[in-house]
Image 1: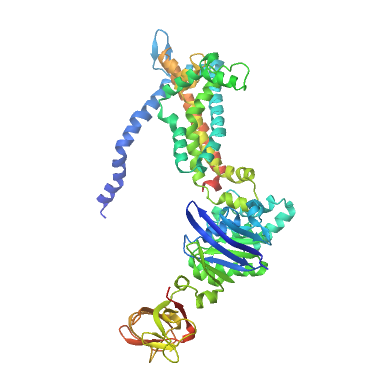
Image 2 (image 1 turned 180 degrees about the horizontal axis):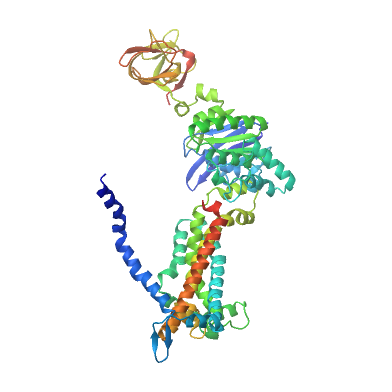
Length: 291
Length: 344
């Protein structure tokens, strides 16, 4: 092969990926870099945005406990949502996997349902169900004798977690289901023949093998919940802000773009660190199951 | 007295009968193979013994106790699965120890027995290895050790060697036989590989379409196949249409221009089966022409076109001159080397 042809071949992959690469750089990397830069700019009620390099916004976030509370709430809601989806979703996936034929497809559709409905419509639906003390959910729980007095759902973290868990459930179920597909179909029989009862089989044989699926589902659910906007905005309202709604308000209500950019950047960095960190931990811990 | 007994066992899935009228008495320490093509019901039968499936009809008894009434976890049988079904998140030693843990064996005894079991299958020193870091053959040995360490009353092997390559399979066959002989566990092997069944078993149960075709020692099933299915399934065979003429004295059996004194019993049209290695080339006998001649090292394989249809002949490579392709030959065999069946 001539040198020119070789060079042409070396350039071909770049040329072929160039359109996608340009789109990626244009709509993701550049705006991201601009947001990061924006977070170092100054802002005043009357002077607007001043393109200078100062740490004012970052200092404000670091020192004002208002922001600390906001971020703690964001991650608290995300963690509770993750735990709730894992506790409900993993058994759900296991049961789903054991169902046969037609029932399996029907229930899979039920689980995937939330993904097919607009997030706003779905969350407003939850708002209707929660709706103050006379909400349907509270009425049901009270008539079932599970609670004495109504639980406040609207404008509370409880309501946020419930609504978010509903939205995020498909990600957990599908992730665990994928892990279940990798299971040897005879593995339960193998444990059974060695004298293990049903609980032991789930605890000692099934759980350890689907744990990677639960954890990767947890990473997806956690990062989506922590950056969720619509559900916290509708259920939490203006009073109970999370990082995403805070950034939105700074951008569009206060018009303090630099502060909003700082909040958004911090959320992004925190999420990336948490996701990458836990992913590395999981991969090391479950190296044998992943291979 | 039979150790493990299957009494007219049948299994139906809906309207489909997968196993029908399966009766078998297994002696203690015996090595039995269920041999048949896929879908013949051999694995279903094994699963009924294991307890993963309940028989629709019939009884399974172990030492005269009704086995079907016992929960699969309490049957105490050792099972090696086709896929091995090792626990991927546990080391080899943990895999083997699992059954002992379930039996509440003390830790010190457990360690000792796991070590002994792994040593028995030739895996001493592999205790801390995870299954995915082991070769297919090694995984197979772990699965065997895991099944044997609980001292099972019966060892069930579900196509355990089918995922191994040919050379390894042969090695494992020999090893499996030696281990089974040493510890004397009653063993049932499910396989579709006739060589495997013949080299391992005391007796073979040949199955087809959910029914038993023949139960017998490897020699019996090979030399005296009870049906056309058995003779075709166990190795290559030649089936020739023949007739028994009882009007002649003495009565004669003739297949083409080959003939011999007729055996007692049958008369009229019959089928004779002769194994290819029992046919020789002679001066008299069935007229045939060599179509192809294939050299296979220690033997020659001839495909012939005979008076009674296609025929296969295998001759030892003993250094003698062998007929060439296209050559006219006479095929001959000793009457005791053929089996004669009435035409159904």
